[in-house]
Amino acid sequence: MQPLALIDAIKQQSETLRDVLLDVGPGVPVATCPGWTSNDILSHMAWAYGAATTGMDTPLDGPMPDFEQPPKAWDQALEAWDVARDKLLGRLNGIDPAATRAWVFSPAAERTAVFWLRVVAHETAIHRLDTEHARAGDDTGEMLGSVSFDTELAVDGIEEYLTLLVPAFVPRRDPIAIGGSVTYHATDIDRIWHVRVRPGDVPQVVDAAEPDDRSASVTGAADAVYRALWGRPSNAVVTGDNELLDTLRSP
Image (cartoon, rainbow, N blue to C red):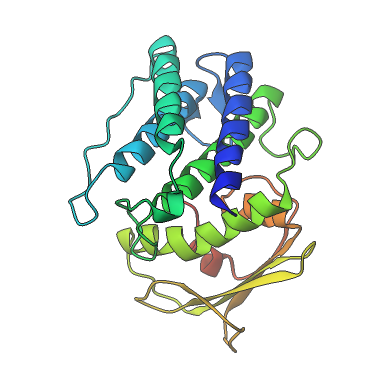
């Protein structure tokens, strides 16, 4: 997605997310984020908006910045959300994100503000989905009637997850002990991502499928594959080796 489209997605998804959170109210369990409540979503997104601004203002080669943790009490978290979101959008006003250098946490990412636009756009979209599930009291349905992410956003989210986030979070886990290939197929645009998984290595997107003893696939519209990658209810068709898929599970 182009930077301006990502900024528009942040604005649109965050406005909807805020409205849904206010409708849900404080202390409501969010089943699609086990152990979280609506307060956690609110505080986490305030943190994400603040982290993006901090990342853009941190020297490229500096250490990981000290990201401020907002409160979880509802009123204070809502205030922190509004301040952090407005500050981020103000920081983005009038700049070229692709030309604005920034500290990033993924070793595979270009060190520009575009990285943070993508992180925030997809964090907002996925947690908007979570709150829609919470409002409906539904942790298994697809929510396709009330929530449907457009193809451009979903494809960008799949690409961001597989190429930028996997290299960032997989090395923090125990080393991968199995090998195989996972295929993600967005059928509505016939877009395919082949992911190679090897013991002790970071999974990588490759140009073509490789013959492997172990394999898995996730197939459906881009919207469905996007949800499935983030471990949210989805009507994507998932087949093959579940242990292999688990190596790519969301953080």
